[in-house]
Image 1 (cartoon, rainbow, N blue to C red):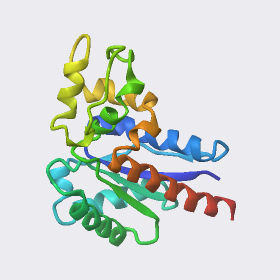
Image 2 (image 1 turned 30 degrees about the horizontal axis):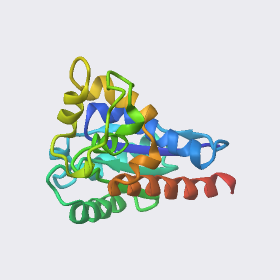
Image 3 (image 1 turned 45 degrees about the vertical axis):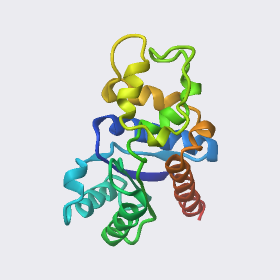
Image 4 (image 1 turned 60 degrees about the vertical axis):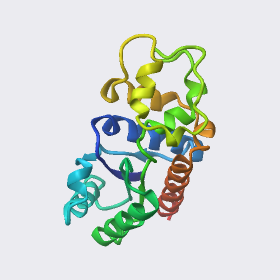
Length: 201
């Protein structure tokens, strides 16, 4: 039996990158644990914030894992305060499927902020220069996508093209200096621990 995690995301880039992220964390947690992450449910954030829409997405994600497993919701905080919005969205997620363990993660500003925190591990990769340096306060950079575009030796950063590739290689230890990624890492570990216990029963 495998541990299953159903995901709800807002962007096209996250559809590909969030399963990669979960599987990478799972490999660090327990390489022997089989983890299945079905195609995420993608709904724009503006819609998810409406009454009933997050709940509908969570129920669909639960169907994708056969009603057995965990639920992970990842949305950019943008200009919202994660400390306020996060607990509200978690309460809505739990109310939709209280029978499944769940987590809600809001990257501070945007998912790409985590790449900025781990920028030194991305040197020379995917059109980024070998001298790439992480900004001092990566989660305070407004426009992480634009920051990455400005660093690239050719072309511009594209979530559809680059996000999954960078998710494959960015260094978790460096990224964890960004508090929102540290929370993401810990939340996914918590889900995996709970799911492994059920798999072993």
